[in-house]
Image (cartoon, rainbow, N blue to C red):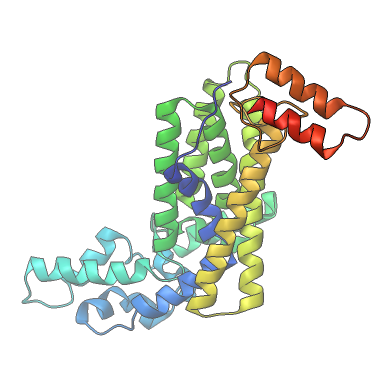
Length: 316
């Protein structure tokens, strides 16, 4: 059986959503928000945030989604009204600057703007009928910089898996990105997981790799999320703890995946070894020499050092 080696790019795409979606990833998002999402200073900043500043509709976590002025078109319309005598280029740059800052807020930017009533109706229905927390829908419909980065990596990994037609890789991605996407409400990760699952299902044939890949992906993602969240709880806030937790999460996910692959797939491609052959044996031996060596190791009685050395010399 030919052994398939996963590229670093694939492994990164597989673990990106779980690692950056863990507690340590959330802590890093908070740190980036403090560095990048600075207070409003320009007239365009204040114009785009005018609805929230005057009504506080949606609160700090949802106003990007429900105030109608944080999608691209709504933000540009608000910026265009900020000053009567500015140029279109200034309005475009003012809009881009504000949206880039908001992209690195914890909540992020909306995929689509909703009316407050629409959001409340949808969130209430999901909560009552599917027992999904109301804030999950708000998180799903907004995306921040880290979610965008991890989602793009997972999409690249799906493209690699589709190009190679590898059921194993695609099923791992479907489970890892799907689990992380559901727990952290990452819309790009969920889309990547859906595409990976569909492509893996189409190419599965009679191969057992689909089920095994789902187990490997889910196990790797679960371990990475648990490690990152545990590190965040133990290390507390701050940039160094967040980066340390992300590194720990990545290492744990990598080694758990390696362990699961070995257990579920074995070690395809590895050369068979003689059960009685020590690690230091030189493999280029004749059949007679191998027979002598086996007989020596299988000899049931104590052997003197002189006889043992004589046999070793004979095999040189």
